Amino acid sequence: MLKSKQATTNQEHTVPQDGVTADDADEELAFYQDVELLQSHGINVSDIKKLQGVGICTIKGIMMTTKRRLNDVKGLSEAKVDKIKEIAAKLTNPGFITALEVSEKRKMCFKISTGSQELDKLLGGGIESMAITEVFGEFRTGKTQLSHTLCATCQMPNGTYRGGKVIFIDTEHTFRPTRLRDLCDRFNMDHEAMLDNVLYARAYTSEHQMELLDFVAAKFHEELGVFKLLIVDSIMALFRVDYSGRGELAERQQKLAQLMSRLQKISEEYNVAIFITNQMTADPGAAMSFQADPKKPIGGHILAHASTTRVMLRKGRGETRIAKIYDSPDLPENEAMFAIAQGGVVDSKE
Image 1 (cartoon, rainbow, N blue to C red):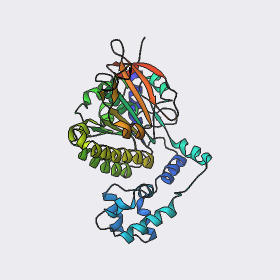
Image 2: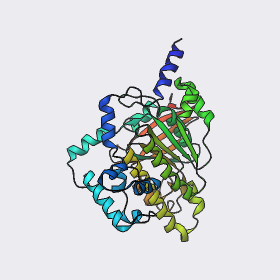
Image 3: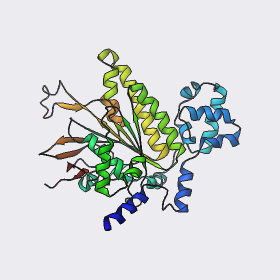
Image 4: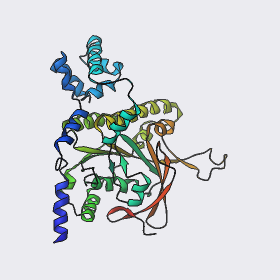
């Protein structure tokens, strides 16, 4: 009987709007300034539709986009772009604010549990919104299992966080709905409701991967405040295929920089958490410098600087895995142990 009651409770929590107070709703509406506000400032509907067509759906989104890119939007003249930029600047505060104001704004950030208390503790509470969390490691270190677990934990309330939907971009064809059903059994969630709250897309090329982000932005705008997490598993797989050799390295890194910049802007524009996985490669120069581990994450400095928090995973004994903070603006370098079980990522028994 108790299990049935828990299942009903968690099923209700899969609808993110439940339990939202009027103050919460007002705060969210103030955060998302719709691009349609331009209409009351003399910009016609057809021009607003053009902006939405390229994934620019908020006033903050306009401020995050260069004039050069706006000029590339078909049907927008240079004069019209200047006017749109001018109006957006008036509606927002593109200048300096105090650290106290930043602190107040960051109170809107939330953390999504990983399914393991030890791993959550390492990450300061979980996967943070308005940030990119990158997890890298060799095969079988738990990257995809962690991605699947987050699909469930994202929908579960945790303190002031009330749960939300997920978008999952799969570049390696490793997404398995059967794993989500295992997680439903672990957390006593309704199978159909939980799976219905995960929006899935299979990316086949690095270009397709970039194009999908326009759809992501449009979806986040369509259901404001409902989606809380974007997962990309993995971020570099298609870039390794589409660009090969040193001759194409510069172009690859430029495209990667554009992708990462877009992800960062989406995370801040819609207050969502971005979780990406990454592969590793052998470092030929490591042996010469006597490094203990001759492997490193791929993507170079572009990915290293773009990711807010980087976590390295490595294998332990049996199903045990070890996570280490590799780089973070506010977390100390530390390690935590977790395990991979039938129900996803759990605390290690060791």
